[in-house]
Length: 169
Ligand SMILES: [Mg+2]
Image 1 (cartoon, protein in one colour):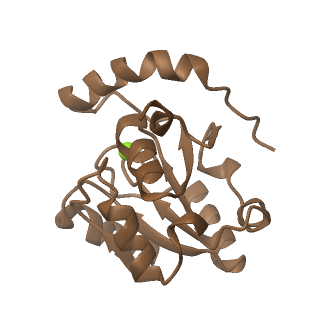
Image 2: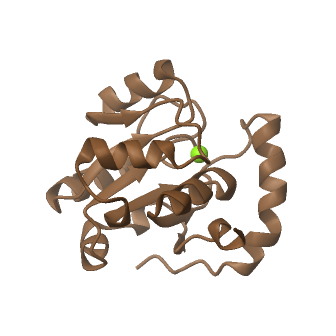
Image 3: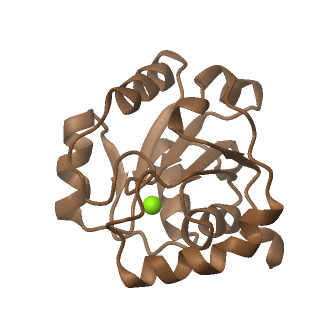
């Protein structure tokens, strides 16, 4: 149970993750959280870093699916804007459901899928339950988060203290 709260890898941001690194680990796909992983909460505009990350994944033949607890109205237009065809909205993370559904949509095994997100009790927990390789990154901007997420951030603190963040190579 407790081990489900620890990611396989902890990095600063999305730019630290490359297709060649994932391929070397045997990964064939990524499951991406949106809010505070790719862009600030409810921000509709992808950054240059997000676009570079996605290009690198595509060039490296890593399949991409967005899995978000946010609504269709938030997730669909964002995915359209960044050219992502596969997404799961209202994913009910930390349930495994969204990750398993994503793996099914992409036609890959969950254990060859890297789940990438900014929250331990949502993304890391859900990804681990589904059997994914889990990657935690620092949230982009926590100032606009709702009280429930703020509460979860407090609970994350003792775990974060025990996880060493890898340098961005
Ligand atoms: Mg998030």
